[in-house]
Amino acid sequence: MSLSPHQKTAGWLVGVVVVMGAASFAAVPFYDWFCRVTGFGGTTAVASEAPAEVLDRTIRVRFDASREAGMPWEFRPLQREMEVRIGETGLAFYEAYNPTDRTVAGTASYNVTPDAAGGYFAKIACFCFTEQVLAPGERVEMPVSFYVDPAIVKDRDGRYVRQITLSYTFHQTELPEEQAALAARPAGIDVN
Image (cartoon, rainbow, N blue to C red; front, side, top):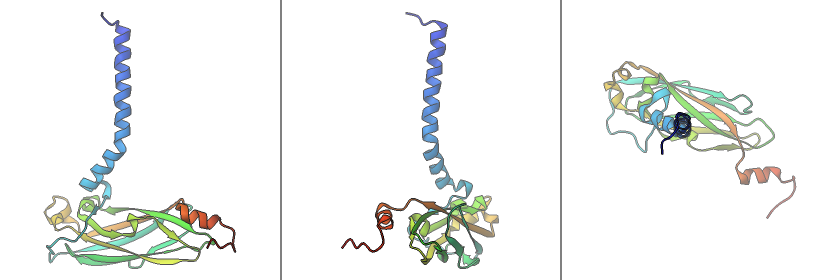
């Protein structure tokens, strides 16, 4: 049994739609993986510890903070910049303050510029790895522990990097269930 030209065309079109649907479904995780592996777009690496090798060469790290529109917190770096040796662990702090009369949750997205440094800037510990919840009037200092991988000096573009900017943007998120339940409970009612 032979297919008519219209049936062949319809079959090809269905195949194209299926392939395009699968590609679009896989695009987000693939892009995320690609950025983490290559440092593309300033995506940083995550590490469990600093490298054993520390170079004599230093690099200046600048710290930047911003908030998504509608995020009520105040958010800022406690230091504007620091000089670290390549391979050395650096420790910086950011401060967040919730000036509202309600509990607010947030998460931080981040990137590094220039893009050539993204794959060589590694965070060991960071407030951005978890959701942050601040009570009304609460002020917290949040650390980020990082290093610049010594391999940057061997990279074709990375070896020219003398300054890196680490930028965070805080986004408001839904309160975790237990926090939302506490916030919804009328004042003066004790559940214990």
